[in-house]
Image 1 (cartoon, rainbow, N blue to C red):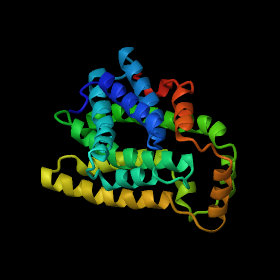
Image 2 (cartoon, rainbow, N blue to C red; image 1 turned 30 degrees about the vertical axis):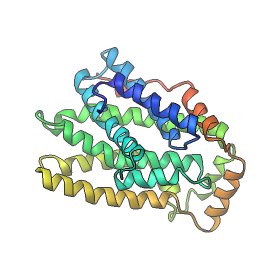
Image 3 (cartoon, rainbow, N blue to C red; image 1 turned 135 degrees about the vertical axis):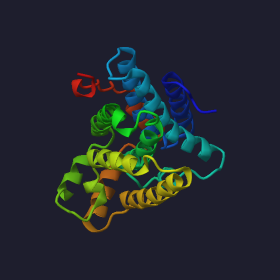
Image 4 (spheres, one colour; image 1 turned 180 degrees about the vertical axis):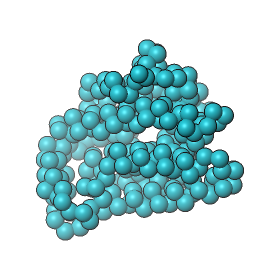
Length: 262
């Protein structure tokens, strides 16, 4: 049974994190950061910070449940969406950077799951009515990026070498942008809004396939980028449980004023 409240979501994420620490599973990297963002949303709702706090909880719960469902499907031996399947398969491999694992999680969750959750929650008020709540989710997801970089400064001390490729337009790893992903998620929600069940599902399937292809791009590198990743990886922490704890235990970012109601 899927969690029905944000507290239940947080409890389930903690169970995923504990399982990943115990089993040395790299899937816990994304879960650890996502847990902190969800806690920040929970605290904002408790403080009455959002334009419509009950609606914000509905959106956050629906959004988080897509990640939790993918995890549950994996545990049962079932196939999740293609976007999450790429992410989970990569977690089995040592060769990828911690940053790549985190990007894969954000790719699946923002580029696919966020638009679907927004479209599903939009009724009966309509999609435009939830735009501010959607923007608030986006802003807190932006904190995910800040927390990620703060933690990675310890976990991956040579990660700044990725900046050597900042002008290389052929690398998805360099080009990947959370802000672009969030904008794309809203456009995707607009495409889904008002569609009947079959058309809705078909649209999701097409989107899933394209996001899975983007995920594959996040795991591929050639030429100098490949050498750079090898060097960064050489000095990066290797033990998944230690990395998960670092990502989980760092002081979480606070909600910015721009995420809150006027």
